[in-house]
Image 1 (cartoon, rainbow, N blue to C red):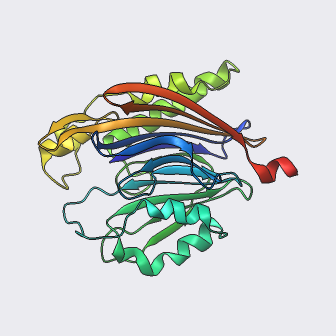
Image 2 (image 1 turned 180 degrees about the horizontal axis):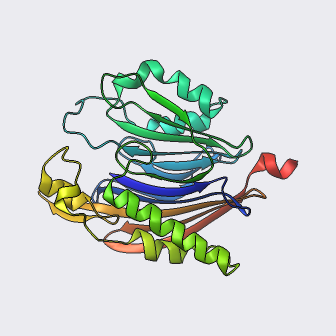
Length: 270
């Protein structure tokens, strides 16, 4: 499970400001944000499936992914984390790549996928749920959006809470003519352990499990080990083409931080 909030093409200084919590078992082998071996993709990497939940490329494309909360899963489904990687390595636009996935939807467990191209100012949302229905492909319009484990902008309690608080913080920065401080945003927004009221849960699986997942920051002990938010990433793309990753991540039960910056190559050449 994961949750993200972002503003797309809605700020005079930034093409994108994105905050994302990745929820996963703490013992699942993972690499924090880094440049991959080919030197074109930067992002975290799942060392089990080989894919990613959030990554971007030197030419200004980016993609991120959340799972859909569901009970029935496909035991030997394809790895969802491959989808962002395939897009970043392709020459296709967000919409072209999304349409390419139409016939593959039933080969994956439930996913929400965001594909974006900073240079062309295009962002597309794709999901293969509800199960048995045609895949949903829609252009993401400028503004603030939130993505958790249901469809884009679904009014789940923690999604609505995060969206409102994100909008409020952005408003304060603008009113004071201040630069966005991603560290401050993470601390105030993404470490929130407030749980939802049971009556407002979506009732997809057990109430007890949904309650544990109903906070923005998740932390729960399970028979398989610790599960919850093991990394928080802030990704900003300035209008001039500077991309910045700021990541807090859990490694050997210790929280660490790092920053990765680069310039989008195509935008710099213009």
